[in-house]
Every structure is written in C-alpha cells, then in structure tokens.
Length: 362
Image 1 (cartoon, helix red, strand yellow):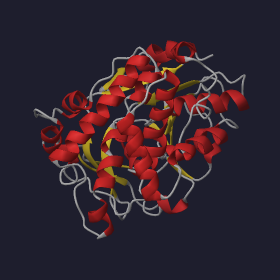
Image 2: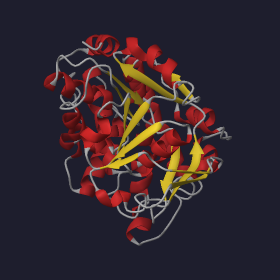
Image 3: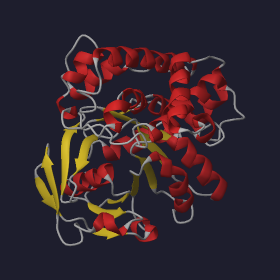
Image 4: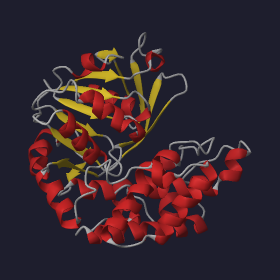
C-alpha cells in the first residue's frame, strides 16, 4: 500500500468527514474541502474523534474552503457532497484538474459518473483522467451535532465500484483494494448507477411517514419507519429496478440480497432483514419532507430510473407513480427537475450505444 498517496475529500458533511477520518486513520495525507467554513468550526481547534466501529482521534492535514488548494497535486479526489451538487462540483473541478488525477464519487447515485464525464468532456476535452463511482457510501455514519465526533455505525462488508471508462477499473482497484478491503468491482458504471439502493430505501418510507415527520415525532428510519407493509411495497419497487437492469444486459443484485451480503443481516423478507441490520438502529428519520432522503434520492435516483426505462421502451409503473406522488407532496415537477439523459450525455444514444459508451468512455 502506497502511503504517499494524497487524498482530497470534497464535502465535509457526514459522508465526507467519515471518509476523511477513515483515510487519515489508514495513514494517508488528507485534505478536506467544503464551501462552508462553519463545517470546520470544531475541527479547526480539535482533532476529529472517530467512534463506534472505529475508535481513534485524527488530525486532518488540511481543512479548506479553497477547492484549488484541496485538489492541487492530489492523487485521488473523492466527491462526497450530496448528489445535487454534482454538476456544480464537476464544473469547478473541470477548471483545475490535471492529467492522471482520479475522481471518485462516493457515492455517484444514478448517473453521477456520466454527469462528470459529460461536463469534463465539454470543458476540457483534452483532460486525461479516470472517473469512478461507488454504488453507495462505504460507511453508515453520522456526525454529532457539535461536529466533534464521527460515528461509524457500520462499515459495509462489500461495496461495488466501477470507472468510466470501464477499461480502467482493474488498475484503480489495484491501488484501492488495500485501502478499502471491502470494495469489489463492477464491469461498468451502469451497474453502480442502477445499484442505487438509497432510491429504494429512502423516498417511499419518508413519504409514508409524513404524519410522524410533520408532527415532530422522532423515529428510527429503517427500524420504526419501515413496517411490514412498507417493506412489501419496497420489494415491489426494487423488482422494477432489477427489471430495468436486464434491458442494459445487467444482472442486478436485489435489495434483500444486498442487505444480507453488505451487513450480514438475517431474515426471510425485507422487513426482517432491516430489523436485523444493526448499523441502521441509530439512523433517525427526517424531520422535514424537504430532506435529502426524499428530494435528492427522488431527483437523482428514481427520476433517472424513469428516463432510462423510457429509453428502453418500458414502463416502471410503481416507480413512476411514486415519483409523481412525491412531486405533488413537494409541489415540484420532479420529472423535469431530476437528472435526465441530457445531464448524463446519453440522450442521443440507443441502448447498445450507451453500453458501449460506459465501457469505452467515448
């Protein structure tokens, strides 16, 4: 393992701080960027405390609101912002990246790597970099309200990633495998994009708990917020996601299998699996409908599923109905505002051309 690698982590929210702390714990030079200085109020004066699955105290090498300072000379740029910031971050990175740097989206959700590729190609066609994405965050994590502690409630046993172009995935894997021993490769970023389990686990349960949310009740999202009936609905929702994958010649892992493989959860159905997922016990539900669990995971999860299905000439009736219902609750046109095929640079391609594109990058 090359401990001389430099990592720039973009975004100092829950996921970004967890990534920065983990990498520093592993012995690497870490730069943490966020556009908001208040994110660093505690960390400017104190070391980052790591708790639960990791017990340690680490001092991040650089905390900065200057993106160029964070990225310059870094080997890996790990984007851990919300996915609603991907377009802005890609545009800003396109101005400062240099050849041979590697950008990893943690996670990319649905189409993240494709969006970065499109923007970088438009702004810096001569730039020679690799873009990769994880199917989900490696960590189930929250940062304390004071910003003093990163809680690693769970570190997933298996997380897939891929690269765009796909031909680079093995080379990147050889570098990362000792840093993240749980990672596995997927053949291309269509796999990681369509393995967006957050789009299944977050929007629908949040919507179905609107009464709790608007009455100010505190509840555990996965444990109390997903009842047997809601879990049954999510299994049907996930079945449509798996069906979509078949049209892109992909055999996707069902959510039930993923939970078992990733967390070692036990159960005969989704409800039982979630009840037995220890890492989820302390994850609270949203306190507003305007939360990333419903806004981000609909706009950048469910909506691109709908657009990709239409490209294949099929319908996803449960996903589409849920998406439209969420739009009515949020009073926005989610189909128009969400990620579409133009954002991902694949609107003019047919299904086979999309498959070829994610393999070759051109």
